Amino acid sequence: MNELNSFLTFEFIGMVSKVILSLFVLVYSIVILRDILDLQTFYDSKFNILFKILSFLNVIGSLFLLLTSFNN
Amino acid sequence: MKLTNLLSKSKSFNKTFLGQNPDEEILGITRRGFIIELKWLIPVALLYYYLVLNFYYLDLLVGNIFTPSYITYLRVLIFLVITIFSLNRISDWFYSVNLVTNQRVVDFEFSGVGVKKVVETDLRNIQSVTISSSGFLSFLFGLSTIHILTSGDNPNIDLEYISNANEIQDIISDLARSTNKNERIK
Image (cartoon, rainbow over all chains, first blue to last red; front, side):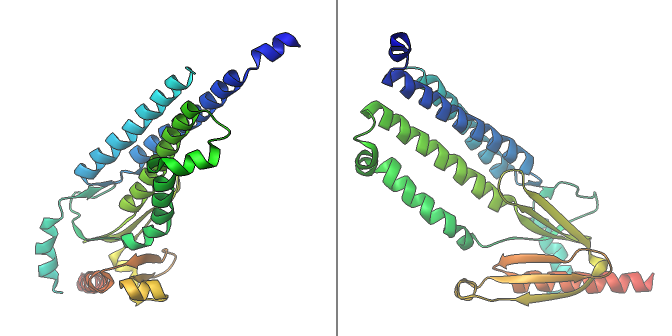
């Protein structure tokens, strides 16, 4: 019981919640990237590239957030 | 508007769409007025201001529960979620276009993740084109809905919250009339 208590510290729970939330954001950003790639039935090259870049940056940002969430 | 004017004007649309035929030209492009998007844009902007830009309110809400590093993490998380959501909604608005070509009317409609509806009808199937406008906001910002009634089992098309509705109605009815006339001559 003592071992379990020492394992489930406040920092550990904080880290796990960070990882779960970051994973959710990462999945959400990947889904949106996929959706934006699928949406482009109407070709307007400038905006197509802009939307692709922005959604890709979101994926990178979410990935970065996930990686930082492992550190406390 | 004369059809010759329309055809000369069509050269300015340097855009294509999925499923476009080689001899098909875009004569009119329209999408719902951006003012309609304010109903989600305003709450999102407020959230962005109060939870991301302004450091005071998030600290006030969860400052007693979480550590400063966790609050910084939450701020970045909220920023990403808001950005992703806004990008999704703006791209949905941008790609939900109504196209009038020299062969058909196409209505691309996207709402939310993976929700897609594409309705098209040939110009020769168009029976009538009517404009309606109702509601205070539509009146205030000059937005109308174009109802395209088609013959037989073909789906009717509603182009909602259009700002240049008169111009689009004119283009569609002129094209439908000339197409039907050509069909009769043949």
